[in-house]
Length: 429
Image (cartoon, rainbow, N blue to C red; front, side, top):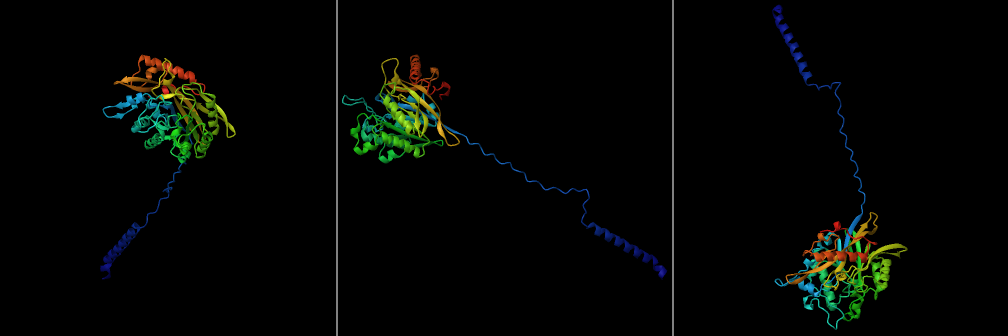
């Protein structure tokens, strides 16, 4: 029996050994794989280092200010601006020759030598024998036309401020406010007069003051109280005026411009009284003086004074002459038709210091042309190359010659000692 079962036992033993071997193989299959000795451990990703943003270097701020003299609106100009078909006025044709230049500056100034008293008060009139001078009152649209060509500020202190009595003076201020034009020189109250006019122009605070002595004997139109504030007087209220200049500085003005209405009409040389007043204004804190009233140009000077314990040199333009008017002489050389455009560049340094960086001027020439049976008055730059002049009406050969005469006359009076004449290439067309 035993011998007969030996093959079976052998078979059983072999099968058991085989199964045992298979079991070991399966166990080995489920073990964790072991890393090879040559496998590299990955390095962690480095966080990039950001370079610090450099702090920008502070830079200077430079602004440009343009200025002209007397804006006069006389009967012939009003007639030329009138459109019968629409019963409206438009003076824009007068300014095409200067419009682009005026719009190019940051702040544009002028002397508004007319009232805006409304149509019912009667527009500009020639004087009667009993009156000391012509009286001026313009349609309100003149302010729209001036604003359209870039004007930001209009001085109202001049000898025609009371041409339509106190009512006209007050309405003029209302119209300027309504149309968004800065102004000073006349006021509705002591409080308004005592409020310094400071305009922020691209971050530079410009203070402006204006005054006149002459009011064409119209004191009678003011009460005693109104006399205190209605018109800022150059000499009668000199102490108050100089105090107002200092008040401008205390209120934060970084650069102060004075727009005085002074000196004698039709005189191309400023008188002693004017020069003394210029020094007082500079000593009080004014930086640049832009004069008007003579209706002709006067000289330009750099005047040095003592201010705040040190020497200060300020620019004085004694008279910028007429900008637009119907005034005319009877000779070929007609200073009443010549004016000045003055351009200032004012710089604010990174340390906050504000000063006049540079200045220049361009002679102006006015002419009129009959258009549709009416005079259209036009003002243009007296460029050295008159063929470049742009205007509503093309200038005739005779007028081009007059431009040359105007330019020579203005440069002769103003010289180039204090500031240069503007290059034709710098005029914006």
